[in-house]
Image 1 (tube, one colour):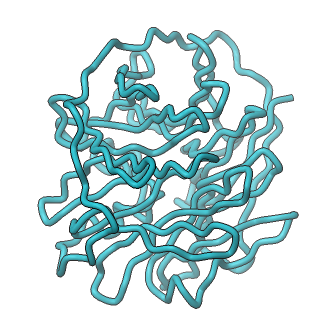
Image 2: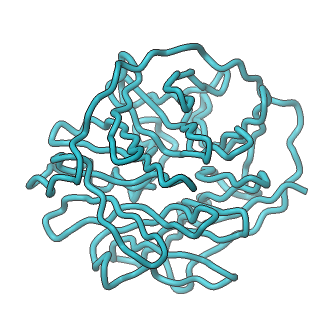
Length: 322
């Protein structure tokens, strides 16, 4: 999730699950240390590049556009297998706030705990766990997880900023941290132990999606102006994932069938959503939109995300395969 503004310019890609709103500002003070320190396991190895092709012809989807009532912008960051949605909304002049849409009804998410500064929500997973990040009064960012109505702040070690990008049914937590240098590092917390995730040779490694089997996806870069997708197996093997012939790629979500949702920047600088199933990559563009970003895919192949209209307005959408 991100509260940064997307643009057709590659330098303005906002490819994070929450963090970029704070990451682009200078850090002020260290957040409290987490329950365990961020420990780096053996160095990540790039095992391969994923072979993929753009499919001929668009797969038919039914599109539904969604806006939080009274909001000036709406972004959807998650969709579960029952149609539950999470995301963020903003009212003109105000910060973004986390929200859910369950049983067809939008609600702000726990304003008493998330406060009046920036917040956003991802998930829910299929047992209803919601996660994300929020900013405190100092501008520092913290991850959080809400399980069975219990709110837990998640900070990765003593790093300045953290957010949570995924929680699966085994309560593995995928996230990211960054310090004053603004460089992103991924983290997988499993059984109370943190393993750092860095694509070899990358400046930034930003994990964004986690499935039940422990596979994750995200993006990496050597220059933030050009991003590349990646897939990490449960065993820690990394494969590079780029949409062929395009300028930049961000892999945002992976379901339990191994299907990946994300977006890419074409050579002209326009943003398009995509779904990768097997070797085939299908383009997803909301009809009439000037840019489409897929942020989540559930196990039925339905996707959620945001799109931009001709005036720059940001709106949520859900696309369901026919």
